[in-house]
Image 1 (cartoon, one colour):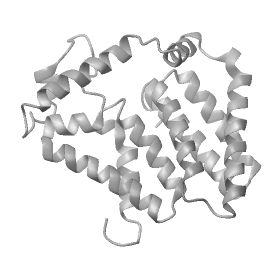
Image 2 (image 1 turned 90 degrees about the horizontal axis):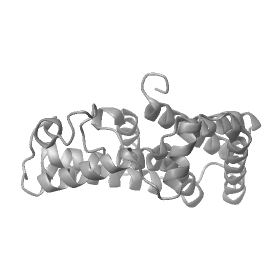
Image 3 (image 1 turned 180 degrees about the horizontal axis):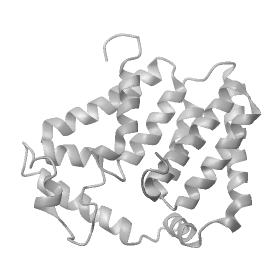
Image 4 (image 1 turned 90 degrees about the vertical axis):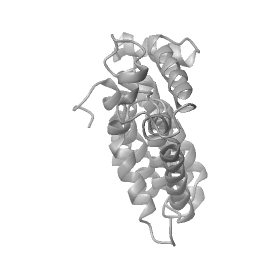
Length: 235
């Protein structure tokens, strides 16, 4: 996944690797898991993609707050914090090696300075919402690119938000159903004590709401299916 696309795909793959490695260390305490945790965090930062970094933070918070991981809860949470600290240390040590352009993008975003990428997403979201309100049955798959089309010079013509995309192109019912499926999957993972799965879902859900189209979120769809298939009653 990381090498089959652009910087966003790399950031997502690396950020998820870092999150899963941190969760694995919290569960097992095996020092070897700290290596991919640090390497993933560094690669996610160097990609310059902000969504995966925010998703990593959301996943770690859910991991700390959620039903946990094997072993005593306090010990598991302590190991998760230690893994996150180790990943942050790796990032700090490698900052001098990072691509200057990627680091500037992340720094500007943290400081609240938004560039062309953020501006396009905001414009796309506004345009999608305006069309959603007058098209309860949707405008058809791929309709954003053909009927909304903000800028002919932009290659990736979609709302960059999974909920907006489904509601716009497939109708209000599809948007509500998508929201329901996301909520049901998170609730099922949380209720059945699958803290790592809940954290993973948090990572991918946040990314799906800020970048990519439906096809870019295959990992999220796989995790949704996994969560909804957990035993414990009907989803």
